[in-house]
Amino acid sequence: MLVAVGTNRYEVGKWVLDRYPVDAFLLDDGFQHVALARDIDLVLVDTSDPGRWRRLLPVGTLREPLTALSRATAIVLTRATPSLPYEALLDELFQAAACRLPVIVTEFYPSQLLHVSTGAFAPLSRGEQRTSMLVSGIGNPLSFRTVVSQIGTLIRGELIFPDHHAYTKQDLLMIRRQLQSCQADMVLTTEKDAVKLRRYVDETDPIWAVRIETRILKGQEELETLFNQLDRLIWTR
Image (cartoon, rainbow, N blue to C red; front, side, top):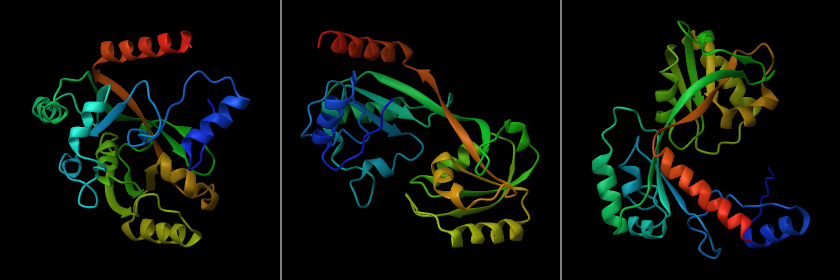
């Protein structure tokens, strides 16, 4: 898989096609990039905080009204749980889209731990029955706390940085002080934050990233249909 970054996605796509035999492009936050023609539009909806996506920026997280869902190919519900009653939520989304769309329901779960400095993997049991402090700089820190709660660790403290935070050496020093202050055994952070923290973390720092994976609770058949649709598009071009 090739990762290409640029302000003009059309020009970046042309640059890639001139150099690499790619079959498809996967765009991050591509739904709002209306200048590009798309074959499949997946809209991810966070079930853990519906209040935020009911409102437009800056009050909420929507970049355009819910009625824009009429352009979507399918809806992917994220951070769901097997016991979550999401039917009312879907009714609201379908009403906004003025149609019923294919739905894929997913949940996030912790799979293992990754030492931020050494890259060594450890089973989740390393965190069981131990105390921890959470560190995150993401848009929904509550969702990270919810995932960590599945490990069985006792959370004694938490440091929340702004989304997309660029960590510094001073931040690491503060994390170390806070870890000592709350007398926790380890720091647990996200893989996203680990990438930006790694350059400052020592091998002796008990700072671990929680690897999170996705499980499909409902909609496997709908997902396979989308994959088949993508295959047909690739082979006919």
